[in-house]
Length: 347
Image (cartoon, rainbow, N blue to C red; front, side, top):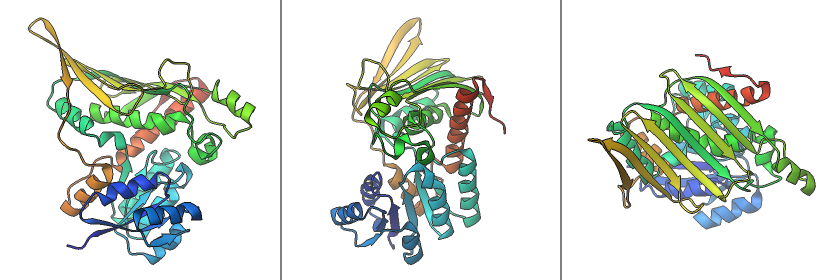
């Protein structure tokens, strides 16, 4: 069987994409593109890739690729995704899917027109623990989920301070669209992606803006956001995301679900990126806690999953349609924060 030929655009985050694709025995990363010549050559040598392009468009024109991975600033997700689809490639795009929901809709339309697949790299789903928890939820252990809270807060952790992350024209927003998008998708996935109906949100910029002014850095996005999201099944989700907040932890991530039969809590350990999870329940009048212990069954990364589904013809998860729902919620949060009013999410 011929190997799936992959091209990666953007070699900051894209370097991890290369590693993830290369884990699959039926994949060959044949070409990469990045506008930074020094980084392009460094990553090419690092991963032993010979075909290096300073222009993504040139790579798409010259190479016959099966899959293209998009790992560039958010502003360029839409145009490069559409260009790759039109070049006959399946696409996996970094989160957030786009700058806004309208751009996400255009990307989905382009995928349908090209008859190609579009997947969003919601990477926190693709963890061994996440898969194990999802299996428990699907077994019915929680019952009906009626409330959830999902959080990613940092005490001081502004990525690339002064760079594109803090510039709305390039990023579309701050920690809400950067960190919150991960925890939002994970909570929605656990909840079965219920349909959002309305949102009430707030954004703040009391800490990072002062630091940016003092250090003469570019920064015009929020440093914290919080929201309440209501769904058509009656459930409620609370979301919090921050790059700069006066909390005890250096970095805190958690997702809590409350169901009619049990509750679940997943949280990071010691300010790091390792997690533990427990399920809390009542049985015959007694309260029990069930802790998930490693090891758990192996899970493949998002890129491996995408390729596997292409080869087998099976549907992939983290679809463009789910990415659109996330973008609709994020748009509504920003609009609610700007107007000070609840925002309905229309069909």
